[in-house]
Each structure stands twice: as structure tokens, then as C-alpha cells.
Length: 194
Image (cartoon, rainbow, N blue to C red; front, side, top):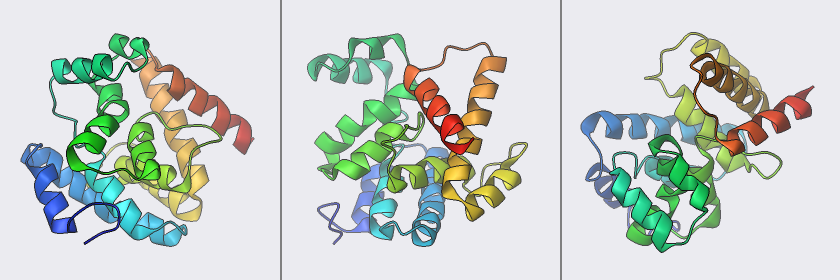
């Protein structure tokens, strides 16, 4: 039994696995392992990090219509309708996690909401852990991943800055729209660390 979910971690894993392809579920498990390590190294409750990591992509493979229905039913920010899965699976996914899994811990739900966009001054250590574990889990293999791991091992905050700078640079290069919260995250961390 975990204090963050009404059941065991094994039961939570089963519920998450039922929602995801094997490929995505294996990613979730690797994020969990990395998140627990980062939590222990940064004074974050490892049990809380484990639950947040296990559910961070719970809604990743849902249909657009599922997300749109939740946005409308819960009267969420109508601007969300202008985005897609990359934003929805965190921001709207947190609502699904709350309603379907009964996870009510506000820090876990916020960490899920922020795991792709980050956040500024309000970004908790737990949110930083999930943000970085998702980016750095051992299955990730992109230019600079080892540099990012080394930086994050030295300083979680420097890791967050590294990720948001490099993620936005990639999005700009692809000429893709950037979610406003991601821009706020970038501005905050660049100013904070300079």
C-alpha cells in the first residue's frame, strides 16, 4: 500500500500497463527507476516520485477525442484545444489520473501536468525530478544526453535549464509552435541561472 495510491505499486503498474503499448510502458518503468534515483539524491520523497513517474504518461496513447471531451467537460482553458497530445497527455492527463486512478496528491498531479512544459518559480523539486527523469531515462539516446545526465547529477536545477534550452532550440529549428508555458519556463530558468 502506498500513501499516494489506494493500492500497491504492483497494482498501480498493472493499471498503467493496461493503458499503454509495451514500448510506452517500458519507457514509464525506466522513468520510474531514474526518478527514484534523482529523488533520493535531491531530498524528494522517493515514493511520491515513483508514483508520479509511473503515471506521467498514463494518458499518452489516448485518442484526441478523449482529451477534447475532458477539456470541455471540466471547462479547462479553451486554448488547450489549439494544441495536441504533446501538451494534452500531461495537462489533461492529470485530470484522467485523478478521476480514473484516484490519485489526489496535488504535487503528483502538478508534476504530471508540468512534465513536458516545465514551469517557472513554482516548479517543485518533484516536478523537476519527473521533468528530468523523463528526459534522461536510460533508453534515451540523443546528442548531448550524457552531458545532460552529468549536469543533472551535479545540479537538478542546471539540468532543468539544460533541458528547456535544448528542447526549445529543437522546436524552433523544426518551426513548430511553442506552448506558452514552455516559453515561460525557458525565460524563468535562463534568467535564474544567469
